[in-house]
Amino acid sequence: MTDGAGEHAVHLAIERAYREEWTALLAMLARQVDGDIGLAEDAVADAFAAATADWPTSGVPARPGGWLTTVARRRAIDALRRGTTRTANQAALRHLEHLMRNDEPVADEHGHDRSGVADDRLRLLFTCCHPALTLEARVALTLRAVAGLEVPEIARAFLTTESTMYQRLVRAKRKIKAAGIPYRVPADEDLPERLGAVLHVLHLVYTEGHVGTAGDELIRADLCEEAVRLARLVAVLLPGAAEAHGLLALLLLTDARRPARVDADGTPVSLEHQDRSRWNRDAVTEGTVVLDHALRLGAPGPFQVQAAIAALHAEAPSWEATDWPQIAALYGELHRLAPSPVATVNRAAAAALADGPHVGLALLETLEDDERVERYQPLHATRAELLARAGELDRATDAYRRAIDLSRNQAERRALAARAASYGCPVAGPPLR
Amino acid sequence: MKYMLLLRHAPGTGPAEGTPEFDTEMAMWGEVMGELGTAGAMVAAHGLDTEATATTVRIRGDETLVTDGPFAETKESFFSYIIIDVADLDAAVAWAKRMPNATYGSVEVRPLSSHEQDG
Image (cartoon, rainbow over all chains, first blue to last red; front, side):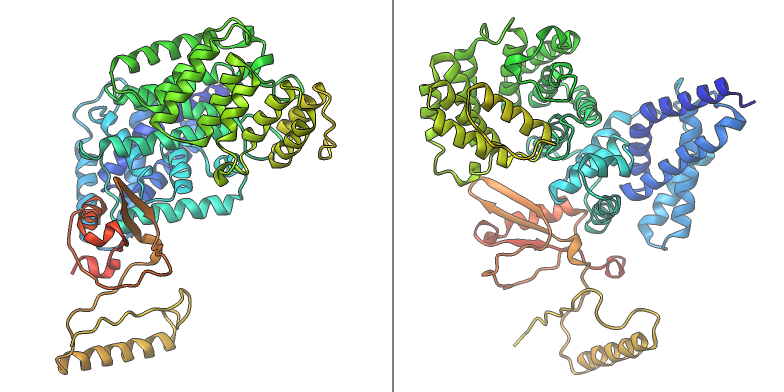
């Protein structure tokens, strides 16, 4: 029964099941095996491998989610039986065997129990983002377990080898199990701090996709899309968490500009020169609605402020017609909520546009002895830009050279060199491959 | 006088499990532990899980820092240990935060090895 069209339909069905079922299935199974994410992940991955092998000949089951749940559970039971005789494993085994005998009582059209799925997905996310794991491990684990990305994809995204990424994940999963990191949503008193850790991880995933820290391509669309998808999931699951909505709004409003951020050659186009007609208006609309919701919750935070800044850019018909005084004020607010030299750099850039380059340069001077930003490329790029606009071309040239030197992204280096040239700053520049 | 003996080794050194050398060493462990018991010198002995499973808690000002690993400042010295039995790492960390030295030193939270967990 496998002609070309049939094969294609099966392939699409598996892709669809993967997108729709992976997170919920893994999250539920991980709870049923006592929070052993490694065991649950293997079982779910095996179930999808079995689908890839079986469905082309046996056909797509009427309830793909139910089929996958049954197979994944069977694999988990096998793994538990092969495992040690530890009492915790025995309890998980009995629980799973009971579920297999009774199937699940509440089934919807997807074919398996959806009650508690939302909570399970949150449990999974909070466990993967537990502060007792390294930040690198949290990011990798979130992409693997929650987003369902394959290990080679994650390794590529972070420019590391598959074996390094594989080891990082194994170590993280082993730590979760051995150290007893609980599989649950934290208690109310810990929730704000722990939610902050989750949002930080998602923001990091997006940022990594938004500007690849190294390599030739500026944007890694897959990471951007996963970050938006996961931020949407958290916002839906925690409707009262203002910063969760703030992050989603920020990512949507930033991501709306993605189609205009590089030209046909892959060279980055700065916000100033972007073709605003290419911005994704649907994402802008959704981002604005989400931001309004966040602000109405009355608990301000850094992500909401950054989203408000992104919204001002999205509303502006042009670079010149942007509300720079308001943006500079919001960066001031951001610095108050979450002091950081990065906020100061952005505030300086906005203040320069509102009140002239000297005002921006004065703000940048406050960072002169700050070691944290000595190697922060945007500081030097911003200083170069403001110096050039103030007519101080020699100092601007030095700053451009420093910025180019600090950038590891080829596309970004080319753009900085072109910018310097447009002001007549003679940067010899690196070899432009 | 009571003393805590801190037994250390570099991972991967010592005889490998399943070799005759390993069996010889196990017999030596059994012998010395038995003698400690009969001499009335044994207070408590537990194996720890690997350093990779450690979590370190420190409090500075209003901020609680929970980090992966057994990281200690080189000037910090190991001055005490407490063995607790709680539901999970979050509960263990909550106790770790209550230790007064968490505000100026650090508290490493390390599970006992899996062989010790069910006993």
